[in-house]
Image (cartoon, rainbow, N blue to C red; front, side, top):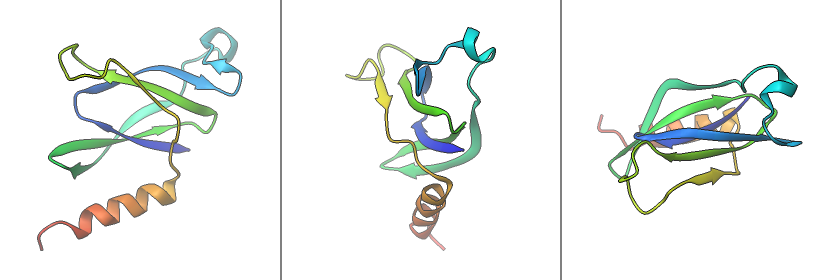
Length: 98
């Protein structure tokens, strides 16, 4: 599995795999992608952890509403591993008050 963090208020869009854009007819299904019940706080924003299947290479993300800022869409090209997620969660937990 691969993972990425996505800011609250942003949604996923198109998905790419090795052959290009995800082809639901070819795969006979949508890509496995789900938001997990884990988040971190970074610079006042909530970042939710998403899990995607290994075959996914890139994910397009965009604000839920058009007035969410200067960005219309972003393509995430560097998805992270489970080990990197654990490191990120531990680093965020270290910053919490005891």
